[in-house]
Amino acid sequence: MKTKQILFTAVHKAELVETEIESPVGNEALVKMEYTVVSGGTERACLMGMNNTSQKFPQCLGYCGIGRVEEIGPEVKSLAVGDRVLVYHGKHQVYNVRPEHKLTKVENDDIPSVEAAFVIIASMGLGGMRKLELELGESAMVMGMGLLGIFALQFCRLSGAYPLIAADLNPERRALALKLGADYAFDPSAPDFVEQVKAATKGKGVRATVEVTGVSAAMKQALECASWMGRISLLGCTRVSDCAVDYYQQVHRPGVKLIGAHNLVRPKVESYPHHWTHQDDCKAILDMIAAGRVQVAPIISRVVSPADCTEVYNQLCDDPAFPMGTVFDWRNIQ
Image 1 (spheres, rainbow, N blue to C red):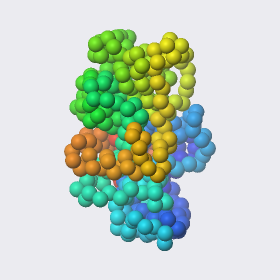
Image 2 (tube, rainbow, N blue to C red):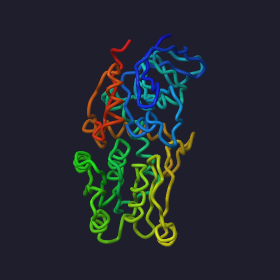
Image 3 (cartoon, helix red, strand yellow):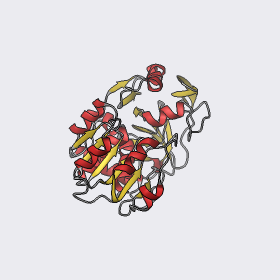
């Protein structure tokens, strides 16, 4: 059958094109998408052909979305036609065919689809926070208030972090961080940034940091702000490593732990403390959204048509003020 998808055809070039998609077989399901979320950092890096991306074109991204099951393969056991599901590592396109274990059923009908569409990205922020093994009353900082960071911030607060510090260059994102639970929101470009963080933590430094920017300069700042035996979760994907780190003075001697937190480094079958499966994290976040403990609505910046994808991705590449919570609405695309 035919479908339409957003395709990165070359560096800095995105188009809505028509393509073919196969019917589901085995344990696969065909999902008609409602919404997909733009993951600004990853998608910009891929579209610009940056380091630690495939640098191959054409390519189609869009790993976070929601839709309805329209057809299932004969081996599917947990899903039925009509189910609303989160689509993990699908694409920005009208239809996605994904294996059953990449789909998470949304069982609470009260959660709006446009909010549920963010859950997969939120789960990445949760996974990065979990690996810090955060305890009630420990200081925490999230560096980078993009989508992963703004969710990681909320999960740090729910886990009892105090004080909770947000760091971002953008004043609007710092304001949002304060609205969603940060006790402090600092500009990392300020010459006294490290001193501000140390003052907020009574001179002790930060016990647990989620580094989401993927910028090596921010990683160096995270080390400068870390407490004795602090932990830093590396959630952002680093594209350029251009800052020297004194590993003896900043890591080895103070006993700082650097924790790789890429989303693919998860248990595949069974959750255990501080390391949950993708499915279990998504279900937990859905429950917290339904209970009002996690906020999504303030993060949604705009809902746009996939027909406008060229303009959207041009802005992503060129404008530092690209709206963080950008969502494609596929419901009226044939």
